[in-house]
Length: 248
Image (tube, rainbow, N blue to C red; front, side, top):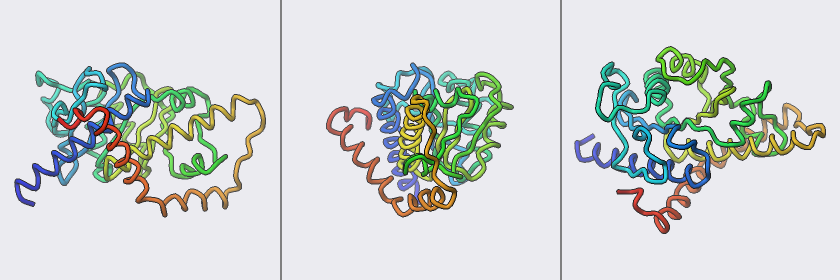
């Protein structure tokens, strides 16, 4: 890869990550100036972009994203140091999970409500909830605000090869080889959580799919992988029309 190609790739990645941040804000998934999205820029995944500390998500631009190195112990001494919990969680993810090129950690309303239940599991009761059947990791050992390296390492260790993580008493994180994949997973995870919360609120028994049907439905989602990229591309077109400064 030439230097020009590397710069072009990072520029495109910055634009995509900024778009994901703006879209999450529009969906009211973020929490004030907290929560954090990251994307790896180096082949080993250890150098990554992350949103700047305590900047409202409605204002984040591609050029605002900061580039950090998961192996740099002096990162938090920088004048532009990231949020402590962003560093604890995302440095651990990018050190130990090179396949997770993109990590979107956030506290969306329905998924966070579900995470507050003693049993936060998403059950296959429709085709969207079934997407996560046997494909969602669960972190059931919340240790407080994740500002310490040990907490980040523990969170990363629960992910395995899953593309999404439900974090009890906390929120969710989705992963992907691209921003489009991780963002589409986040979109559908919050939709699945909303369906679970609404269904549970009726007090009626859930019509949970049999194992074979749930697994077949989950597997069928893999045939629609191209839709993940189309979905994100369409949402970027909305931003290009209504808030194009995310690309700056």
